[in-house]
Image (cartoon, rainbow, N blue to C red; front, side):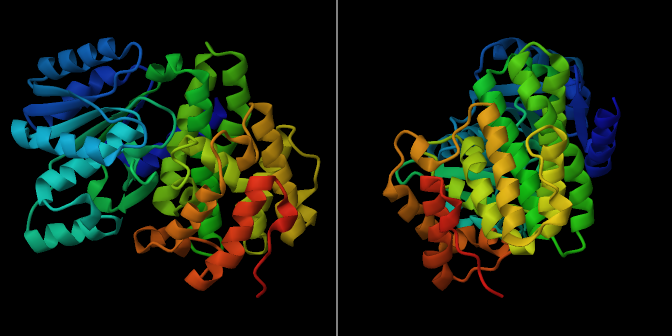
Length: 424
């Protein structure tokens, strides 16, 4: 299929031989691992059917001369701090040559952070932000343990990226480590592992990947990187918008599941080229009531209207994809500004409703004004400053209480008219 071939070409351009992806590639984990070391530790997910995959991993490792010196449970959803501390202790007790993560984004993210703590010491708080792991490596003259990340979900693309999302359960706030030093040394994603994933998780993951590409477009518009991100997003967004409804309607269809794997992987490429901003920033304060993908799905249309004047090319690209698949009749190339943002938001709402997603925060059980207050406070936290810096409409801390608050209130009530655009 032409769209799959394009996605494959982009992913090979992105990762070359450091990424094994597609159907039935898990059996290649052993030969890949043998190039890194002889003694490994595995952190694993525990989803239905996972035991068989762990047996396959152990067998292929053994056939390649690699011994698993320990197998431990992976992380809970949203990678709680307590889980990564447990993982760091496990690594320290086993002292492997390298670490393997087998699971979704939470397990992979927690392993990234656990390796940092075990290798460099300190607290996870020392590394929230951008580039602090690399700085500590240089100061302490230490290396990180190698990491093979084996993905099991079409979602976050944690196996491909420099991000580690960690959650403080007591405050219901997620924070982020951003550093090229934590990109896994080898990535593997056997797309056939996703064929039994429950549809709710499939939808959440697809929207996570979709938001990665949309936000990367927004953050790079007007910059040299935009051309590459646009190429990635045109393919990846198309795959998700076309095939997510098909995956829901025909759960046993391997082609649609493959398409979502390609699409979300391209989301990883997009955020390694650009970056995320508004919707992701707000999602970090909604972890107690929403999955990450669902939170981004709700917030993206509202931030699209807020950013509209600065992201004309992005909105036209996105709008025309939604139009191609029947979610709008608007002539996106003939409108601009706020009207363009409103029209794209309407198409996004139509797509969300098609798959049964909420379009306002008030539709979510447990939502309250407390979540808006938490999100506004988080936006002023220096540990999350990268999200503000990536916004196409720059916001100072003094503007957050006015402009971002209006975006959040609009998302609460489903009223795009509340949003105020920043005047140039």
